[in-house]
Length: 260
Image 1: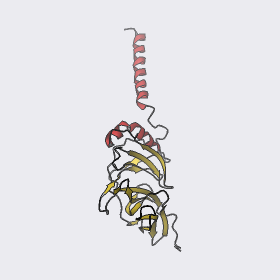
Image 2: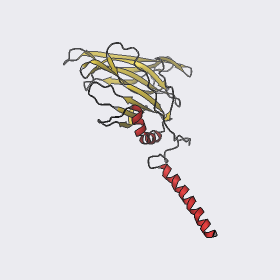
Image 3: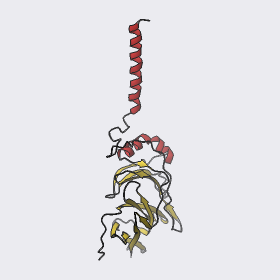
């Protein structure tokens, strides 16, 4: 065979291989955000997260929003998925969010359309490229077996305690008591105390009861995520609905020794 023809065939084969590599990358893959500030590569695959039970302590007839923790970034962000309780309206709601626990603001959110027919893992599979793109963009590192810690805990030689303070009042329209003010304090005998979370009733949230479910410790910083479980009046009264609220706190800054 002519040497020129052989060379041309080799060039063509190399071109096809390189073109294949380029196609595999795709527009949805994150390339520019694949490292942390320390230069560590974190571009990764993700699996469907495991549900966390944060409901302990409530008795009676209620529905529960489901919580699926995903993982942390090294800069104070936490990613999770939720499945909203079905209150008889026939609409399935699945949402993924990334919250910045330095300011407690949602930095990215995705949720199903009202006519979604799939559930959980099917939704995860169908939209995985988008989930992977944005979880990597926010440098989320997925963790297995994420657990809730107790309200009293020790960390690096210091003691901490989470304390919930609420104020109730009678709702003028419905005639039963609701929570109108909430404060979560993080106390430490060594550091003092600080306010982690505050709530004031404004938009008819109709919260009947609240409990601190516990905390989740960041594996990368001296920071915790506090999980507050709330029981609200259901769309038809009973059953009530239990859902969670997140708030973040650094374990060394913001404490005050003067509590007056």
